[in-house]
Image (cartoon, rainbow, N blue to C red; front, side):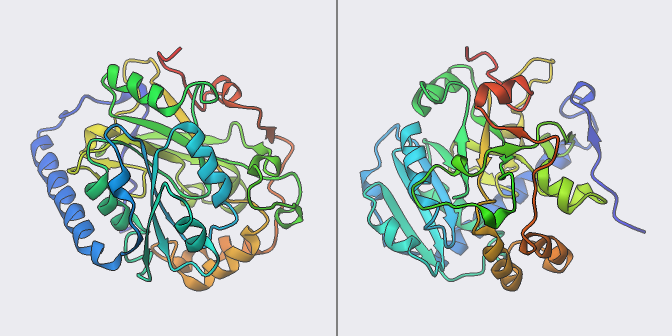
Length: 357
């Protein structure tokens, strides 16, 4: 008998917490799971070697960014500058055995603390054990932004209101986390046909996105949103869209050392932190992570990732996905939209100001 898909609800039909008699048992199981994840993070810290530890410079109230990466020297200059402009004060970075200039570039940044590891990305739960440790050790009491090097955070009014203003407002309304949907950007032609150089804005090359082919569910156990769709679902998983990447994330959290990311940044424990939507029918403030994966280098990197077999729990099931990227596809279609800014995303229902007007 095949495994059953997790039970899901539309937001309007979401039952109240504890709607079953087994709620106490479920809460106990999640508490135990969180303790196991924290213990894993403590154990996995032994795989990290400090290369440039500048954490003594972190001050009370600083906003921290936590990143796990490999071979991202092309993206790093703009990534760092973008998030500095937003208000990030310090970057905590794990470099997973980069073979390019990533480590040297990061060591030269006065606001970066760097750890290196040759450990298995897959065996560390795709880097989450390492980042959970850095969050536990250095993030307690800080608002922390946990992102990949190919993600750029935007949110309502981001050009004029920095992250400290946003986090003060979130705290004032009792919110401990902010959700962001990963918006996958792509060029108009073949992926490798574009020209991009380090330091340039990736959006000068990646100007298009899918505006409407998204599915949204609420998972009962963790009460988190589950969003799928976008160009990868459309192009690489048209017959089985549930295998497509998950797009919902919780990147911005006022961290506590007892918290733990469960599955990348898609969900958190304690589960109450996943309640970043308004069950009464209103809207809560959310952002977007502009995903810059589809720069020209993705074709070559996909061949490497397919060989390394580190990015999926069962890499054999995703061989055709990598083959599709290696074939240098055109993701643009007649329904693609040109990205113009956060107000456009809000008008499409992909981001919300909530009460932050």
